[in-house]
Amino acid sequence: MLIENPLNESSLTFPLLEYIHILGFICGAGTVALVNFRLLGVCLTQKSAAELWRATMPWTVGGLVLVIFSGLLLFGVNPEEYYLNRIFLWKMSLLVLAILFYYTLVRKAAVSARPGIARTVSCISLALWIAVICGGVFLGQAASRPPAAAQPPAGINFDEFLKGAPHSTAARPAPNQ
Image 1 (cartoon, rainbow, N blue to C red):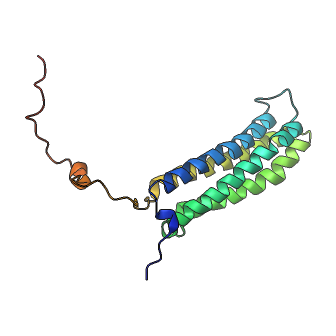
Image 2: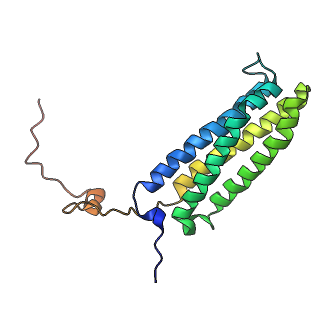
Image 3: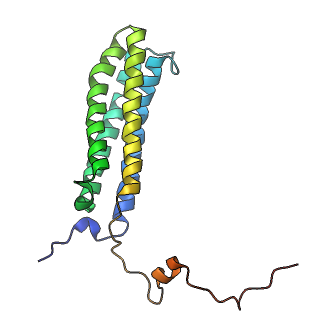
């Protein structure tokens, strides 16, 4: 007996979950980047790093929660494709490392007033988050998408279209000379 995954019932589920996942990452990683850039002294210098840390914390946590839950649902759409995928395992390892690094060393650097250490910590943090984003991009390219739930319209053969089947040129107008 084959058990159907309810997440595969609609062809819109996977793209919608991806959009939610990306939105969460924009909120979570975007605020992480703001704090790290502040530690580097690049932007938002009118506030201290500690003030910026406190101000962005709800957005960071909310974004990361959205990313984690939408990521779990994305995983549930086609778990066989992901659980043995090296890129997926690499991305998850980097995500855990980036979160732990951000909430320990970056937090300490934001609270302390030592700019040399803060710059080093923020560079490492930014590198980790960029690696997580790249892992997601590579995963999107490496993992095949689940089959669409909806069948193509009757009378349309997408396989012939993709193979470049010859088209009739009788209906085309002659090019102007």
